[in-house]
Image (tube, rainbow, N blue to C red; front, top):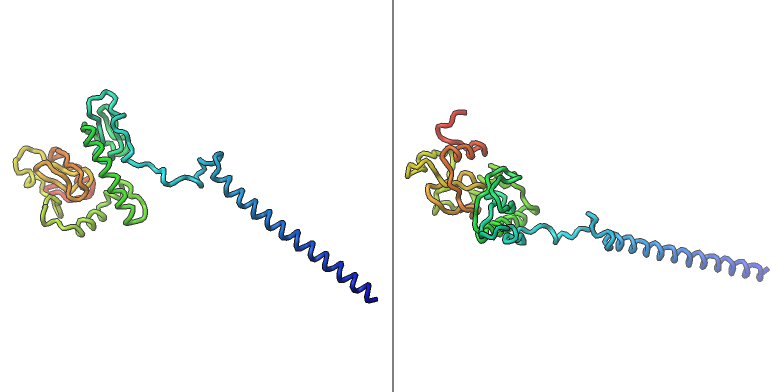
Length: 223
């Protein structure tokens, strides 16, 4: 009787031990399969998968080869003053904002790209993502930024109802206006104290059109 009990217990022990070994092997196999799946996602065959994209390879405007765009080798290219990455060797319009491309030297084109890239990096640090043109031109956001900055030393940032005639002191019918911060207007050439871009010479009518389009108030304008 005792021998039968011992034999039975021994058999049960062997069975339990066998089940434990099998279970352990299955867990190990599942783990290996999981590792293989992870590796295959980023393997050479799947390196273009969106789930495995290398964020460090995102477009960098500072890496644009401006000299390569200057095909006629005249040291100049045509560049959008709002979208500096839009470059060509011939006159035309920007495919994004439809502004006329401006002829600039290769050096100035590169500087504009670097300024734009730095501005985008600063905005990314503030809100955790790069701001697109619509957000950068948002009137409320620009007003908030202007309030934070000290404008006492440079009064070309216009507020309230803008009187273009009084700004045109030399009465030549033209002013210099920033193409991103539209209410930055002067009677002389210079740079915007907000974004650092060069002011563009425009007619009073064009300056007025830009202001109204971007929700600024203009003196003597009838809606």
